[in-house]
Each structure stands twice: as C-alpha cells, then as structure tokens.
Length: 542
Image (cartoon, rainbow, N blue to C red; front, side, top):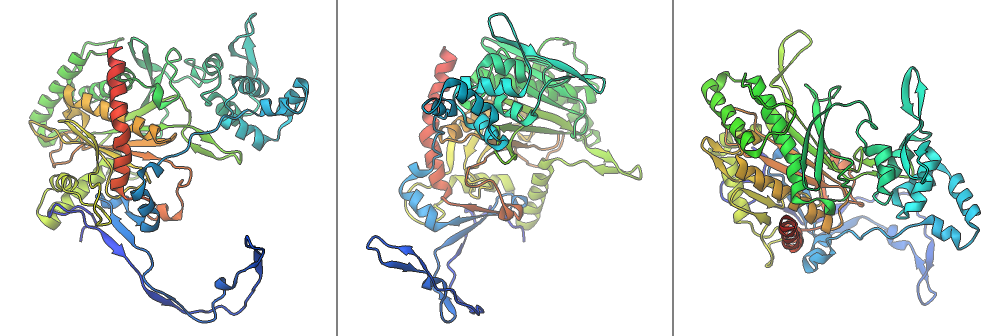
C-alpha cells in the first residue's frame, strides 16, 4: 500500500486519533509537596502527579494524522487543542517582530560613555554573539565590528577595506573571531559601508569566479562559481551585488527576483545545451529573454530527436534565506544573510568504487518513484489526482468554515498550503501548465510565460511568509529529470523555520507536529497575498 494522502477519489485521506486507554501504574515512591500558594494564599499541592492506582484516559483530544502527499516526506500530526484556537482566530498565526535593542543606550543611562564602551569591549563571548545578532543600534554594531577585525578607514573615518595578514603563505583578513565577524556583518542594522567591506564586495569572501551577472535599473546580481563544491560538477550562487544590498524579503522587487532567477535559467540552459552539443555564440554578457527561449527550444528539439538515448540530467535549485547565530555558538540557519540562491546541474550517473555507473541522487527522483508506485497501486495519475484533491479539499477537522488550501494562482502555477506540512508553515508551488509534450516538470520545459509565473509566485510566497513574521526559510525545487516523460510536475517547497519548532527527534523520524489546520494557515496567507501582489504591481509601475 502506498502511504500517501492523495487518492483517486479526489479526497485527501486523513486519520483521526481519539484514544481511550488504561495505563498500569508501576511507580513505587511518592513525593507529595506544595508547589507554592494560590491567590488566596492556600497551598498548591502536587497530589495530581501521584495517583494511587492505574490511570484511565477517556477520549483524549483529537489528533489528526495526515500522510504527506509525497510519502518520502513523512506524516503530519495536527493537535486539535492548539489548532481549534487558531481556527477561531487565524490572526494568531504570526511571529511577533523583534524589539528594538541597544545595550549601548541602556549602559548610557547608568555610566559614562567611556565606561559603556569599555563594557561593550569586555562582554563575555556568548553575550557578544547575542548582541551581534539582536542589536538594532548601528553605532553599537560598528563598535563591535571594529573590536573583532582590523578595518581600513579613509580620512573621513569611513571604512574602505580590511587589513590583511600573511597566514601560511596566503593573505587572510585580520579577524579575531570569525563567527562574531560574520554575525555582525549579517545584521541588517549594520551600516551598508561596513557590510560592503566586511562581506559584500566581490572577493572579500574568497576567490570564487564571477561567471555571470544581471543588471537592470536598481538591480544587480553576480553569479559565483563554487568550483570546489559538494555538488557534483560544481554549483553556482546568484548573489546580489554590493551595489544592490538586499537583506530583507521586503527589500526584494519583481525585477530583483527576475534577476536571480534569470541567472538560474541561463546557467541551466547553457550547461544542458553544451552537454547536448548545442553551440551558442553568447559570451561575456547575459542572454536576453528571447535568446533564452530560443536556446530552450533548441534543447527541446535535440532531446526529442535523441529520445531515450539522451542523458537524463537533473536540476538542483535551493535558497536558504535568513541568518541566525545563538549565544551558545550554534548557527541556526544559512551561511549569510544577503539574499542569494544556489543551483546546479546533477548528472545521471556517478562512478562507483569498482568503476561501475551508479545512479546520481536528485531529490526529484523520489517524486518520480511516487508517481510510478501510485500508478501501479491505483492505475491513476498522481498529479491529476493531487490537483483534484486540492480543488475539492474539505476541512481537516470536518467542521464548517474555510476549506481552500490555495494562496495564489494564475493560469500556469498554483501556490498552496500542502495538506500535510513538514514545516509548520510550509507552502508549495506547483506548475499546472502543460507543454506540448505533457506536464511541465522542469525549467527546460517551462516557456517564458511559465517562468514568469514561477518567479512571481516564489516572490509572493516569500513575502507572504515575511508578512507573518518569518525570518528564515529554506526553499527547494523538486524537478523531473530532463528528457523524461512520466507525468511529473515541477514542484517547489518553502520551509520556514519557526522559533518554537526548529526540529527534533519527531522530525528526524518524519513525524511533523502542527498546531493549526492547513485551511486556516491558507486563510492567514491569503490575507497577506493581496497586499503583497499589489506592492509588486506598484513596484513594476515605478
């Protein structure tokens, strides 16, 4: 039996636990004590914790079990005790904004400026990390930066570079505490001049070659090659340039998103074209949208002729947005705050230890396996049934009220809340458009209209989450291998990290605990999406 919530009936399969059971009491010792006093001054004992006999639980609150549409992503458990409160008030689905924070200002109320500066300099390391991450005071962050690295200043006192030292025969920036340095540089409240010389200027973070760029109006993006990569064949990163500083999702314009995504499409198309022996004359400039589409069509023609003889490459695309670092020394997300996206082409095979070809991993292959297993189990098309289940969705709790899981859609794409979320606030984007050869399953099969819809929907998804207070999101692409025809549709997942849900043993087992019904989260997102889309349209007009 295939363990998926999707079914050919057009209804999601949902389980509900309402357990009643007996528990044998095996406790030997009793420690009765008072916990304190109530408002009347009477003792509050802990006797309830030490029952005399066995314990009987009668109809515990409902827990809804929703298998993921994609079985390899596990199963979600919705606690009705939490979710019912959010059904009554979807406005509870929100993260509160960080408060204004300045230790320097606080110290200034109690001691002299010199003493305050000395205290900042001598703070224990965990407190310095916390301050670097949470401070909203630009001057305080500047002083912290100057305390952990050697900066070069001009006569006006502005930072213009870093001092370098010779370490093991190589020049390295003179930094005392790299984690503190990075955390300060990743704080949006640090003045841009400091950000630029510390982490944004090309070359300051290493020797990765810039092999592409996009420039339009106020948008400029560089494409860096990560040649020594954990990804086979290397991978690429589209980073905003030091001339277009983007630390917050609200900073992003439609043109910004077009820029980072154009570099992704351009690199994938050129790499695939070269692997197929398709030449193109463009060098040392970006391809236009028209040239990109022309190259895509050429790739399609060659793949059609080669058929099964072609190598089935795959695309890899991901985006870690948001940086956080704890006082205890744990990096909580991303390598840097500056908005960037990463991508690569994954080969079909990798050479094994004995020289034999082995299948090379791509996460989209797991979706392909689901499609095949679903067809064998139900003699039906997985994505056709999935789309039908989304369209005909009913509330998870069976109650009246909002039932739609759709956040935003156009003729090409569907942005929705998955019935089973692997992140508490997960969103997904599915391409519903078809090409001449069938469902669009990768960016090679996506024409300029579909690509535009994908880009717009990605920006809406990120900005909707940002409006709800999210500051850290991992985004991934599940794509079909190039040249295959198996009914697979291109799918994106947006996975926020929430302060109260960073992942633990449950998540490691594929069990995801939720405190809301997906329909109510979709409603909370829709309330933001209209304003987000309007702001995007206004940005285009400007």
